[in-house]
Length: 150
Image (cartoon, rainbow, N blue to C red; front, side, top):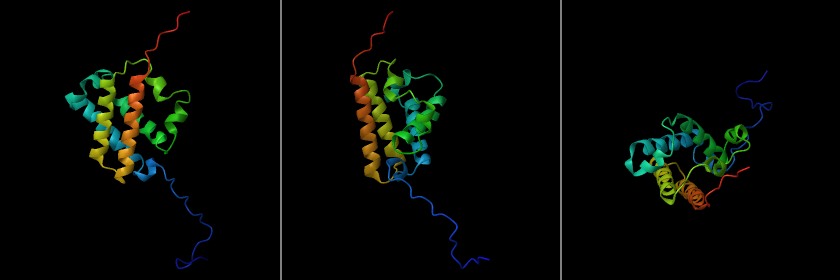
């Protein structure tokens, strides 16, 4: 019989959390809060009007999808990527005309949401916002796609 004073040797130690931005910043609750704030800003602040106009009236699917995407992108659970094995941000956004202005609005809203949620460590959060802004810029800079005709 094992008493509470005796150490249990049959219980495996929990694996340490990976040192990725997802886990370092606080995991799913933090990424959920950032994305919800991002969409709140898009819906409420006229500074993001052109960006909002590019989206469907109902943002519920995006409010559910973006935190999952960012989680996997930032080194957390890869559920979004497993559910969408042939998709990436570039392919998903290919049909949309992303201008420098809308890319700047997306980046600004995301960086503002990150700053307002204020996950720690701050330098990791800031770097994540900067990398996401760079991704937006890359989407805006891509050449227009011509449909293939048969």
